[in-house]
Amino acid sequence: MSKYQAFESATLPQDYKDSIIKMKRTLRAQIGDVDALFAQVSEFIRGEIASIKQQEASTGSGWPEIEFDDIVHGKVTAEQLALIKRRGCLVIRNHFPRDQVLSWEKGLLDYLDHNQFDRVYRGPADTFFGSLEASRPEIFPIYWSVSQMQIRQHERMAAAQSFLNRLWKTDSQGQQWFDPDVNALYPDRVRRRPPGTNSKGLGPHTDSGALERWLHPAYLKAFDKIYSGDFESYDPWDAAYRPEVEEYAYKDTVKCSAFRTFQGWTALSDMRADQGVLHTLPIPKAMAYMLLRPLLDDVPEDELCGVAPGKVLPVSEQWHPLLVRGLTPIPDVQAGDSVWWHCDVIHSVAPVTNQEGWGNVMYVPAAPMCPKNRRYAQDVLKAFEKGASPDDFVREDYETTWADRFTTKDLNTIGRCGLGLE
Ligand SMILES: [Fe+2]
Image 1 (spheres, protein in one colour):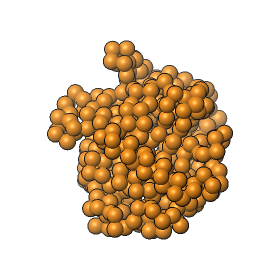
Image 2 (tube, protein in one colour):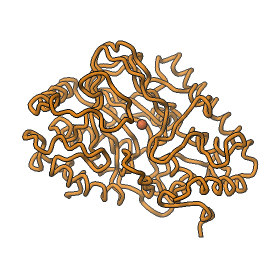
Image 3 (tube, protein in one colour):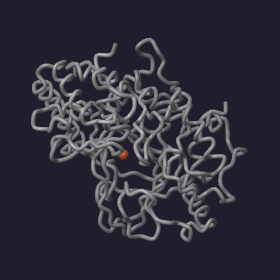
Image 4 (tube, protein in one colour):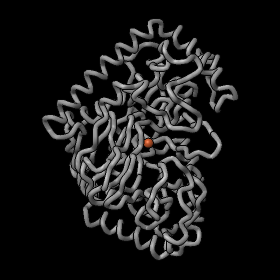
């Protein structure tokens, strides 16, 4: 019988506030001195932020960087691997040749133009990224262009995803939790931000569940070391139970039905680090701070520092000032570089005024095959065959009638495996 049975729930509880009250009671009793544990975690984070700032001062960036060719030739050093695991994020330089991504970028634009996207676009269907003044969106709800599918099923993408998945401990608790060398093809959108853009950015948060991180049985097992007061032994790279998390269904918000080891995107344009780019808190173990903060006495008993069903997990100046201080921008990137961050890593997008140059990216995460991802791959396959929006996104279905989208006969072996066809 689970020690969390008083409040744990695989689906959104009817009275989730009551579950929060019971959760706090159970966890406080189990941890004992919550203040001391929180102080220990805070001390660790202060040390990590100092190390990040020091790296920034000496190398120009707090992010680890590796060359794609070093992945392929097994030349990533033990020191580089240790730094990637410590920071939980990285840039892969020259992941794709520049000419290749610029031709994908052009292919995508042609696809939008042939199909008169500007005329048919009905405006943002969700308000997650705020409203935009431009006639074109910033995030394009387009999934099935030849360009997007070619990058998803590219052997260089598969090689990087395997490398990233292998940073995780896949075998633990007597089970293999995912296959690091087969990746589910997770269709996501593209972002195209033109020069001159003014954007408020996006506040710091984490994805992959919010309330779930305290109430879902699989997350309670994944975070059991933290919830037992043993922060030292907590390993954010242990895959145990993570693919068993199912985000709570809530009205019709965007959610993620796949387990992702890393979220990521590939740059389709050069981007300077001061032009409203992605920031992370490069500390995967900072999740412990997020999880323990609501257990302190100054938070109302039925609240979790701003967590609400169907919303991302927010990081705020009010509740998490130490974490906000550590937010670190990506270095300057060139078209063809890719950027990756661990699924627990806090991230934000900085505001920008009169952006210089383009800010174009294709979102392609690492989602290794496991029962959860195989299930979602079946839904993805159906959407792909129809040219419909994938189940995780708002049903906008722009592409169903578009003639030149990527088709089944264009799939290679990686694509077929990624859709669960092989
Ligand atoms: Fe996010």
